[in-house]
Image (cartoon, rainbow over all chains, first blue to last red; front, side, top):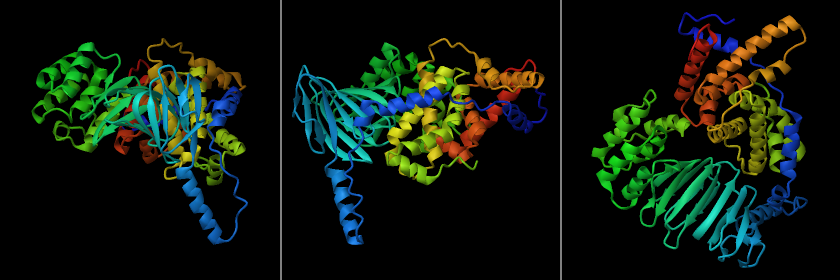
Length: 316
Length: 185
């Protein structure tokens, strides 16, 4: 049915001609019904920002300008997010929260904060958090202590959660994060990606992976939940207790191909003398893509590391 | 493709929460999103429907935040890419029941002989596409159904244009081998 190609350039032509046989499938009408139902669900309706209908006030340019300034001020300072009490009692008792305000749950209470139009944050017991910014292009919380679970459906970098030791930057995802009074905590990503960042030290955490954070150090190195216990313990030692060469050896020995997530981050975190060991271990799992050379990796060329990460991410 | 970049007025109306505009946008893209998902998930209609629904719900939720500094299609297909990858990651451990032929059979034409030939070719291509690793399968499907440029694909797949070119080239080569008698990738 399909003839064998004889020239290298012919592959694309043959593949394109073969793909022409692949028909466009018609999406079943049930999908549209399901989408409409999702959009009509109370949760979706409730998170819509309430806009004052002042648009009739289209008067002269000066009034428009005043309106724009007022509106912009309103968006920045007055947008409030709905707070739903799930159980127990909240402090304060208000049903919404705005920039600069605190929300606190006790040992038996839980709440849900609806983050503008982009998602929700479940607030677990014994948690204290503050809303920092409610701008449409920046939704920012400060988690002082406790645990939250965030579900965000928005373009990347619109939702941020600060802690004392790291800031979680949403890249379109679902995650859970806890932190103690000192700022030590754990991030667990269940969908999408989160960037965990502190003073230029960044950990990229995909679904299925965790990342610890410690006061004074910032985010540790991410690891998959199913990584070997030895690897996780050695990583803790390496990141936060000065485990050095011995911890690194354990990490390298217990790494699997999927743990290239961890090894990729370690490239920039180990001593220069140890970097070749990490590189060689990564290469033992899969050859790097074209353009990713040993020299460029060992000198931490940003573009090279990004290309390699993007390639490795298919197996993460 | 003329209708790929949807009218800015529709996007603006969607951002204002206009459901009719969103329905128009859905109608413009639904079959492409569904087809890419369907063939990405080896013909599994339930997975394709899940991804399509998830993509459009996320699209609606994030529409107000879409600032127009990127192509709308890039954003849309990035959502498709993320949902496909998240879906395939989550379902990796699950044994798949591959039934690509079922869908093909329903889209075939009336003429029986021609239909048989066409159906057979389509099934062969779908089986071959199914055997490609995800990182080659997705660029090929995006290229086939949406004719995205290398630049748009790079933005969608979050990689360089060189990587896109390399994946397409390797994917096409693997596809050729799979489609020739006794071929293996």
